[in-house]
Each structure stands twice: as C-alpha cells, then as structure tokens.
Length: 177
Image (cartoon, rainbow, N blue to C red; front, side, top):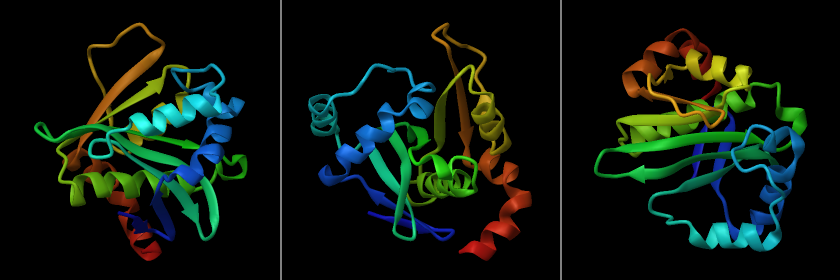
C-alpha cells in the first residue's frame, strides 16, 4: 500500500530503509522532539522493525520525486474503535522548513480517514515543540484536557475537524493533485 498525493509518495518502510531511518532518528534535530532520545543501534532498529505488528502499524518513507526525506506513520491502530496515533519526522534537514511535512501530514490524514476509515487520530507532541503544536492545531488537532507530566502534550482530531481546519487550503492542495 503506497499513498500518492500532492506530488509526493508515501512508501511503506522496508528492511532496506532501516539504516537510513536509524540515521535520521539519531540526528539531533529529530531526537530532541522524541520521547526516546538515546542512541539507537542497528540491533535496536532491527528489533523494533521485527516487532511491528504490520496490521496495526503503518510506517511510510516520505518521498519527493526520488528524494527520501522522512517518515510519517499511523501506529497502534485500534480497529475496534477506529483510532490511531499519527506521527511524522523529517530526517533530511533541507526539507524541514518546506511544504513537504505539511503535504505528508495531510496525505496520511486523508489516508487514515478515507481509505482506512479511522474515526479519530491522536498525536503526542513534545511540549517544547511549539512549531509542531501550532501546526497540529492549525489542521484540526485539539489538546486533550487530561495531560501527563512527561514533557509531552496529547492531542486528538476527527475527520470533520480536520476537513474544517484545512478548508481554506483545499483549493491550493487540489492544484497539487
């Protein structure tokens, strides 16, 4: 299952991508926003990949033309309640302050609500990552009332909130299809 939208491609992660993903995940600009911030070894990455239940965890490489830029995912999918946690990180720094993360996020959310028929998405964002918080709020995520004190803020959205929040950018997105 690959997702093509807005001039980008989301390709399922394969074993051949693991070294690249591990390099990205260990980069300072990525790990500073993650819950697990220690160095990830090759063995740890392999264990993580082998342990994934592929039915409930969808991890994609974000590609623009032939360039691989980062990872977007839907994890811990609860098929009974139709929920998942969404996430993204950009591994290649030149893509950090571009439209690519926006396009990848919108594409995965449309895939979640449209193709997978999920009802609700969750997001866990480092409390200090104000840029990510503002972005997620701009696409319909709302902060949950109940929060932990683990340095992360917890958000949720549904398809209606997402569609309403992105209504004004839809004409521009449609031109990219």
